[in-house]
Length: 288
Image: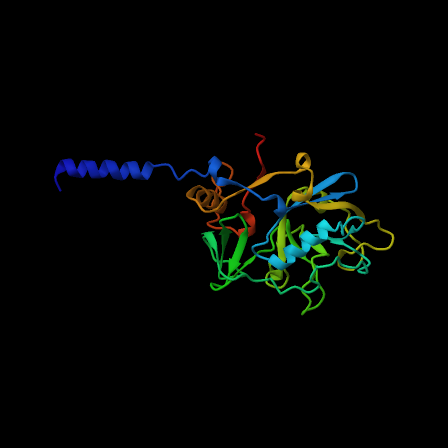
């Protein structure tokens, strides 16, 4: 190789080696609006607000049930009646006697597994509960066996309480994960969303002293004042949120940063992470 060409090649190699990694910070276009009818607002006693992002693409019949329950104000006057430490907080009608509104499907299809694996950004290491795991373009944690996909039981995800199979749960009884991700529930219970605001009001409640964290007779459940779809609220009162899209190099760089934390605090990179340790960010929409 000519000496000039050799020097040029060495300079190019050095420049490439010194090139900074792809930026992990999002640009404004990476933030995308969550539709109003995919936001469910639950108000607990004490004016504590919990906002749930719904996942109709993954559990369409269950989410349709939730919308009908909210529009019928079915949850108003029910309660949070189960808080099991390091597991779940559950709410609904503790008596299990309240009739369902017209049109609610009492036993929907088992929407535990989707039709295809659509994670556009995959985790580096294999998932112990699935062949693959990663994040869908619209910001959901998903896993797959290579043929079909499902949402994963990460912290703050919302699922549907049910009886023994073949029951699938109407959606009237819901729970959210408040502890270490119980991934063994994946593909056994329908996941319908994720708490994106007010998780502290569900995770910090007194633990139930009854079996499986249900409140004992001497404990007071937390009253639910109302549950509404944001799309049914007055425009001035509607909350607005955006999710960070996962279909771009910036998110991929963010994810690799979550898998390999950097100095000065971290001295040993992990080389990977659980999908639940890299939940795509959600933010309140900027005021315009």
